[in-house]
Length: 348
Image (cartoon, rainbow, N blue to C red; front, side, top):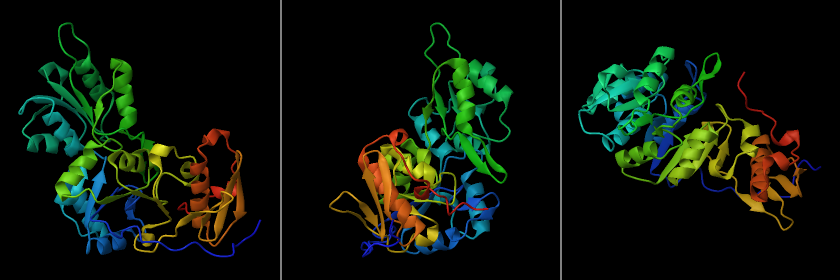
């Protein structure tokens, strides 16, 4: 196995080049726990000098102003109008579903209550107050009693159409300072188990939150920046925009090589320091080998073979993903050497 190929692939445009809008996730992209992730703040502030930058979050527990204030504390130059939240997308769906001013049962925190209030809806916390819909989002204080109210409201009644149920997002986990904790998807699943149906979802990976961003910023020429394949990247694919996966958050190289077609990013970077840097092209050689930089990976049947480790671990990961993704084979049927998904980038 050679360390270097004879030549490197050409460098292409930087991921940001030609974009009118960047959409950035928060947890795992900009901050981890209470601390900003290295390079994120300075690179996004730099980007904001030439393109619009929106911050897209599935977190329904905080208002847009609270999120903006937090980002400003970290050093980002942003305002509430640049924050696109899953409660905002949920309210858009609600407007299309029930009459203005309707009474809505809220399971969640300030982010949901604030957006519903701004839209003129009446908020209740009790199923006994005859809500016409249920809107559910994550908040740390949500517990059994709140989930039970949702189940009571959503229970089938003879002669009544099923109550509309909108959930902000399906995130199974949320990253916190101590690790991964249960997210809104887990709480929605509990209600689903009780009522035996699913809600309509507003946040990533569904398209309503992306459509809200496109409308607000006036363009679809956007790049999504995220750290989760099943929300950020899958959502970008569904919305028809390219995406950049940054290895500073939840999903790691092992998840990338195994990514299904509906959650494969156009760019893979170690950190946002690469947002403005030329991105190496991927070339398919005559024998089917995929080359990125000087890293080369080939599929020999169901076996992924490293032809050349190349000039950097990130290019080897990119080449490995390109070869495996192009094979059309299911990951569980492949033999993949550990060097292809070795995690050089996990924070301590």
